[in-house]
Every structure is written in C-alpha cells, then in structure tokens.
Length: 423
View (cartoon, one colour):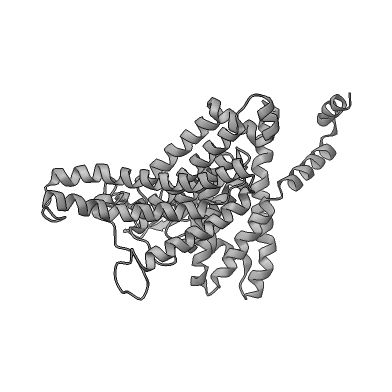
C-alpha cells in the first residue's frame, strides 16, 4: 500500500514540477515583455480556470464576493457560477481534445504512431455540417413543411434522429480515412507517420476547397458553409435542461461532453477488459512477438486505425453540431487533432490522464489567449505552454532524479530492493 501511494505521488509530482519549471523559464520572456511574472501568471490562470472576480492564485480556490448588502463573503471558487464560470468554457474546449487524444491513444496502443487526427476531424466535420442542413431540407421537402410550420412531433423526431445520423456519418468518414493509413502500413509497409502527414494535407486542402466552392453559402468576405438546421443542433446546456444554472453561462457546453465521457469509458473498457484490447496492447510492444504468440497483429492494427479515425471524426462532428454550427474558412487550421496527440503523449496514453491533461491544456490555452487583455502578445502565452510541455516530456529525467534523491534521503528503504536486484 505504501509503495503504491509512493508511486502515485511520484507520478503526480512530475507534471507539477514540469509546470513550475516551465513558468520559471518563461519568466525571462515575460520580463522582456515588460511585465512582472507572478501577476502575469496569476492573470493567465484566473482567465483559464477562475471564477468571476479571480485576481490571484489564491482566488482559484476561494474568492471574495461583495454581496448586495455590502458585506464580503468568501466562496469556494470552482462552484461559484455568478455570470458564468471559466471552467465551463474549458470543458467546452476540452471536449474535442479528449476525443482526439483517445484517438491517438488507440492507435499508439497498436504500435501505430498515427498523427492523422487533424485530417480525420475536418473530414468528419464536413460530413456533419452537410448532413446537418441537407437532411432537414429533404425532410421538409417530403413533408411539405418548413422549420416554422412543421408540427412539434416532427421537429422532435428530427432532433432525435438527425444528430445521431450526422455523427455516425462523421465517424464512418474518419474511420475510412484512418483505415487508408492502416492498410498502407499492413500491406505495403508504408510508415504511418509519413502517410498520416500526407493524408492530413490532402484532407485540409479538400475541405478548404469544399468550403470555398461547392458548399459555400454566400459571397461573404470569409468563405463559410450554411448553418446547420436547429433540428441538427446539439443544444447547449444554457438553452436546454440547465438554462437557469448560472455556472454554464457564456459557454456552449452541451451533450457533447456527456458523449465524450461515455466514449472515454468505452475505450478504457475496450483496451483493458477485452480480448481485442489485449491484442492491441501486445501489438504495441512488438508485432513479431505478438504474431509469434498467435495474435493477428495486422487485424489489430486495422481495427485500431478504424476506431482511432471514428473518434476523430466524432470530434469534428461535435465541434460542428454542438459549437460552431457551420464551417468557416480557416477551420482546418485549428490544430485540435495535433493538440490531441500531444495530450495523449503527456497523459502517457492513460484514459484518466487524458481527461485531466486535456482540461488543463484547454484552460492554459484559454488563459494564454486572454493575455492580450494585459497588453501582452498572445504568442507569449503559447511560449509559456510550450515550455511546460517541453518539461512535461522529460519524465525519465524527473523520475531518475526523484529516485536519486530518495536514495540519498532514505538509503535504508531502497537497500533491500537493490540487494534483491543484484542477487
């Protein structure tokens, strides 16, 4: 029990140390920009994770609020939802990140270093946005109705069927596009890193063409598609069940978060509690070893790529159906897929770790963007995040130094294990 607790504490100390070192190194660049590091970091974290009124690191947990009668009371910050909470926006931004990180994890666990999530995501988004307005148009045409004249029962049935159909189509498109890289690897031994990079570029150019020409809605200065119909919209919590809950105000968080949590649970169960998941984890170690043990490594690889692509396609669908409602030129440059790969690596391919790291990453990005309100370039926030990621990737360095420190401080506790290993 003690050794397990020690292992957990060591694992938790590594990302904390990475964040602190990233902040320390970034202080030089903050100083060059003419600002004090500590107030800048406090503003960044408050904008990313704090409640309204957050001004310091302490306010991330407890924030003073002036009541109507003039008195000042201290509230637990994460639950204070007056005029909305930044964490709701963080969860909105983390939703596609979690899915693309799960997508990368499934591929990694089959020994496929796939970074094709961006291409699969944007293709899934195109499929979702097209079906999001085309399917309702066909239904209105067949029934002789319109969005304003359609009976409530018809609209209710459309809201129950169109979003699942659009999401399923996006998952199929993403799965097929990922399968291409898988089949190239299995049949022709094409390096999946190269093939997914090329496939990403093809997908981005294709979607850009579709948005600027065949699917363009109008002659606005910025090319954009039509907005999806209301019946295809995954209505945010603020306009549905939780419309009176102040905590969600300002965000477009909705049922997509619940779908992501279900997907995370399914992926965890698949990888750790099923025969197919075991085959993938064995394939990750060595395809030859897996084949020698009777595991069909080629089948495990293709299955992993199909699941990986479906998750990325679903991420694109949720971004459209739940948040954006249309694709605007430049959508393909968001980099959500690549960020998801980064989250998966930092989380060490752990499903629980992905949920935590994706939320933290989304909050940092949000805080970094808002640094411009402090007369700081938003690029500085990107540099701070980059340093944190750099140090977080140095896990072996931290772990080795923690072990050396423990040997020096507690030599007797490690002596038995050393003697056992020597024997």
